[in-house]
Length: 330
Image 1 (cartoon, helix red, strand yellow):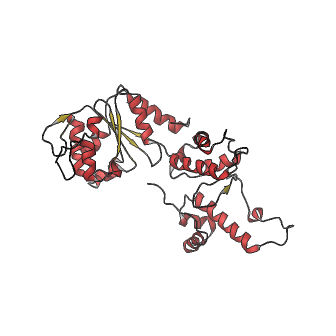
Image 2 (cartoon, one colour):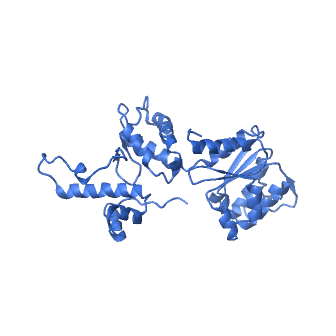
Image 3 (cartoon, one colour):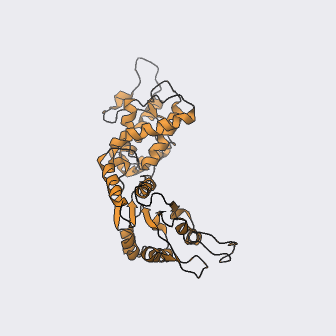
C-alpha cells in the first residue's frame, strides 16, 4: 500500500497491531480504497503468513452458489452437482479467508457463518458430516453494518463476532499527500505496456489538478485516470500536461485549481479577428460547468448554486454539453 499520509499511516499501523492476534477483523472503507490489499497485509504479517490466503467477493455470487463456494457441497446435493466440491473455508484451513462485500450476505448464510466463526464447525451443502477448520475471517464492506443490523438486515451477533476490531481505510480525498506518489507509481507501471522507454513525468500543474480532483472512485479511479491520460497524451518525450480524468469528457488542460479565473481570462486574443463568438461562449460555458461540477462533487444542485443557475438550468447545461454526472459513492 503506497503513501505516507497520516491517515494511511494510522490505518497501516492499526493493521500491523492486529496482525499478531488471532481474531476476526472487519475492514471498512469506500469502494476503491484498497480493502483487499489491507486484508493481504493483515494475513502476511500474521503467524498464518505461510498458509493459504483465500478470498471471495460475496456480492459477485448468487446466494445459491455462494453457500456452495463458502462451505462446499457433496455430489448429488443439487442439480448439476456431479462431484464433491471443496469450499473456500476448507481451502483456507490454517490460513485466512477474506470475505469482501460482506453486507450482501443473506441472513441464512450469516447464521451459518456465525456458527463457523464461534465453533469452527460446518457441513457442506447436502452433507451430514460436521467438519472442523481453523480459519481467520477477515471481512470487508463499504456498507453501514450497524445501521443494517438495526434494520434487521444484518445479524447483530455476527457483527459482534466479526468486529473484534474495525480498521477504517481513508478515502483518497483524505490523503491527498499520497496522490502524486500513487499517480507516478501507476504511470511507471503503465508505460511499459505503451512501449515507452521511460515515463517523462507529470507537469506541476497536472499534479495540482490530480490533487484537486474529488476521486469518488478512490485509488481505482485514480489508476484508470492516469493510464487513460498517458494513453491519450502519447508523447514520451514531454511531461504529461493534459489529463483525461473523465472518460466521457474531452482531455482537460492542466490548470492550477487555486488560480482564480475571470471570464476574460479565457477569451481568445482579440487581435486575432474574426472571432467565432458562439463557439467561444459555448466552450466557456462548458468549461465552467465542468469546474463547478468537480467542485460540487458532481452534485448538479450544488453546481447550479456555484454558477448562479437554477437546478433546471444546470440540468439543461449538462444535457447540452453531454457532461458526465456521477453519483457520490456510498
